[in-house]
Image 1 (tube, rainbow, N blue to C red):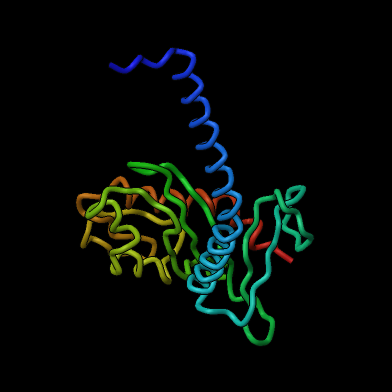
Image 2: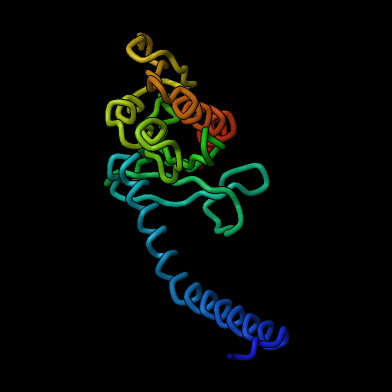
Length: 199
């Protein structure tokens, strides 16, 4: 008959296991963090190029002291200005987020301040309901209608789109659809005047 382990021995074993698990988590995080950061940066670059229709180049403008400046400010909010082969601006890519039905929806959209129209939209992060809410990123008809749409946006029931600023919402996912519209409208309320006055 075996002798039961003492409470001290059990606690010691658990403490050792916990310490090992903590060390392993820290090690894995430190080992993978640079790769994750590189992958996120590459995904953002692809998204910028997509919503700006593959510009010849783009630069970053930072929001500092109430204005946009090309002077680097790592902790400042930012937008991305696309340029054509002649160096002329073709529009801005803006990243914005807002709580959706399940979790925060983060997206990027292209905007031309001269025409006040969108150039495109792409969802970057979303945990909306599979098969319904996730259509905001998978439904090509929904995503495609943002190209060329006038602003501010107005959501309408599916199939009822009739005006330049209207967007057909997804049946069964109106909350997620409305979230996308609100994200863009709120971002443009903040950034629109700054983009029109950008250097």
